Length: 404
Image (cartoon, rainbow, N blue to C red; front, side, top):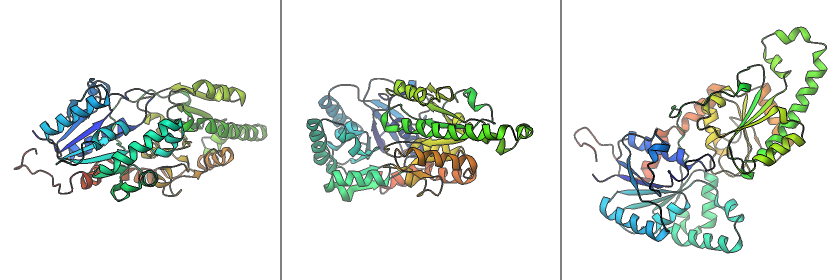
C-alpha cells in the first residue's frame, strides 16, 4: 500500500549514547503522524532493524532499510524506492539524508529536508577544504527541496544566511517531545534520593558543545558559597537542622550530576578535582531515559555553547523541574520565551550561571507553569504542524476510506 509519508533518517546508525538527538525526535514525530492517521514508512541508512534499539517505535510504522553503502549506492536505492513505493512526501533528517533526498527533487513526491542543529558552528570546526565542500553542497542541493524545516527560529536564520536562495522555502517547526514513558526509567542516583540535598543536573554528550566545564565551574562557586553559609550558620542554628523546611536544604552542600558519555569525560573529571569539588560531582555515564533523574533534581541546567533546539530542556520542564539555560544559538530562548519560564544566561559566563542556579534553588519556577509550556511541544501538536507542510491537502482518513 502506498505510504503517505516516507521518513529518511539515520535512526539505527545513531543508536548509542555518543550520538545526537535526532532519533528521539524521529520516533516522536513518526508516532504523532501515525496517530493522526497518516501512513508512514521509515527508511534507514542501515541494514539493522531499528526496533531492536528503539522498541518504542509506533506499531503502525512501516520499516524499509535502504542499507549501508556509498552515497551513490544509497541514492540509487532511494530513487528505486520512490519509483516503486511512490510516497506522497519524503522527509529527510540529517545532512547525509538531506543530500540524498534533495537529489530526488523535481518528481511527483514532495521533498522536505529537516535541519536539527545550527550549521555554522559545525562548519567552523571543519578544515578549509571540507568547509568549502560542505557550503557548496548546501547551496547546490538544499534549494531544490520543496521545503526546509528547521527546529528553531535561530536555526532557520542560520540556514537562510548560508543558503539565501532557499530563504522562501525555510519553515520553523519545533521538535516533538513526548511525555509518555517509552523506555524503562533508570534507577535513581543515590544523591537524588535524599530530598534535603540540592542536586543540580545536566544531561548530554560530554563534548565542548555542551559547556559542562562552565557548569562545573559555576557549581564550584555555588558550592563554596553554600559551604560558607553552612559553616557560618551551623553554630547558631543547630536546633533548626531537624526541621523539614526549604531553609534546611540551603544549609546542605549541593551536588552536581552530569548524565552522558563522550570524549571530554577525563577533562571534566580533572577540572572537578582541580576546583576541589570532585567529591560532590558525579558523571555516572549515559542514561537512556533520564526523566526520573530530572524529576528528582532540584534544578536542571542546559549549559551549551550551541544547540539546534534543546530537547532535554523541554523534557525537564515536562516533569516540572526548574531550569536554567545559556542563551545560546539556538532553541533555549524560544523554549523559555525569553526567560519567562527560566533564567537565560550568557554563554560561558560562570558567575551568571551560578547566580541563576541560586535563584532557582531559592525561588523555583512553578512546576505547573513549566509543564503547561512543555505541553506546547506534544507530538500530536507538532505532527499537525508538520502535516501542513508535508501534505498541504491532508485530511485524516475516515472509517469508510480505510487506510490510505
